[in-house]
Image (cartoon, rainbow, N blue to C red; front, side, top):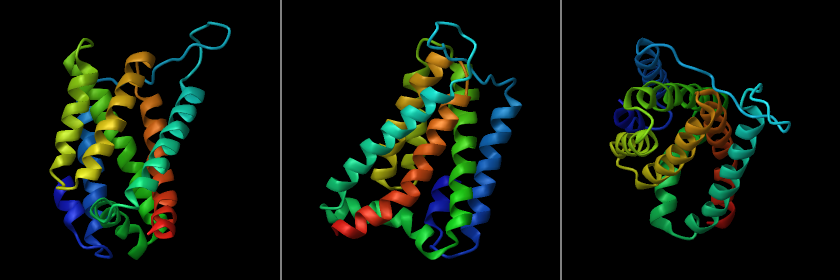
Length: 194
């Protein structure tokens, strides 16, 4: 489904329906698997009373900086920038607000499935490795190596975050912050340096 959705030409209304359907598939699979936990984070005072919000904002911001710096390199390599631009073309041609909603909804759905249901089904010992690999392999179906690299890095970070917090809220926040920021930051970076 992911591969098909990303092969739909930019501007085609079918892209929106396909990506929302994909989010529905991920979410339905995750919710059918059983209860999903939000997770907890330790406070500065050492108590385990907080939701993992501050940590997630910091990790999301760090990931944005790393990918923005990576975009400086990608912009100089035409083969790589073409792969990134192939995805960003959907935002350039379509409604940016709709694409932002698609990015957020799919980020939530992917984390519910990969760092929620799949992570819980695997068991703790190899969950980070296996969920990261499955996420990257799923993304490989798009045929876009830059998306696969992004999935591997994001999957590893959110998998580790899931291990630390014990739930999906942290990975969801980190994913949505990262993907939404990339939607708005990558186009001007790539256009300025091209």
